[in-house]
Image (tube, rainbow, N blue to C red; front, side, top):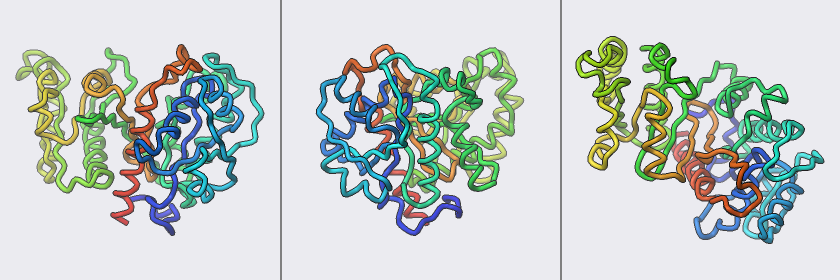
Length: 349
């Protein structure tokens, strides 16, 4: 359930979505503009951008799109403006941005947009947050000390709730939902990072999210092994027998529908995917290769937080920024997914 500290005076699906601008020198502004331009084709929910109107207008000029903008001062002005103009809540920062050339000077805009969006959600003024990609290396130069969006949002939510918020990353495409147990962990460090507690906490979070956010009354979860052939009874590795299987057995005893540990190389063909609703993988590429192969326009979803947060499943693509080459489909899918999750959470309130 959403945190009780969120003002739920209006149903979440009646509220607009907040979109943070992301790295202004990347493709974020372009895909936001293109998503709004295709709002009717894809029946997108109303959304507003938190950032800088001048940056969005320049991005539109760079890619040759005529963009009507409407500067708003409050999220409640979004819906009335959305059909005829892209609503923008301008943060009032005057910045010079060159496509493809990020600068640490834009960090206050990038991070401020995320902070403001989070505040709007807790104030009951926005249904959820869709984040355009950030350039973490630039933010690090400005003193940002979080691994990425997800951890930063967990900290912002914890500041509101005081509950020690934790989060889980899910990637979702048309035919697959996957969660990497370890995320940005070097492959050599993965085995030692796999613990019974991490498996248990992640699966509990995933199981809850599948029910709360996707409306699945009895979620089915498949769990990959770490080693080739899921260890082949210990011949190719012990982690399945000593760590993974015992953790799964305890959760199955609590009533969860969990299969595994399974050989990862046979988990993702059509017939196999029909047998589960989400897959837990042991490391980054084991999860992301299948989902991106099946659907490169997938969505990054943060599970476990009291707010709704989705994101395009790609980076800032500095090499093509400002060249009218970026596809908006992952952003479009992220917007639709955020609206769906908000709707499911509203039904549970």
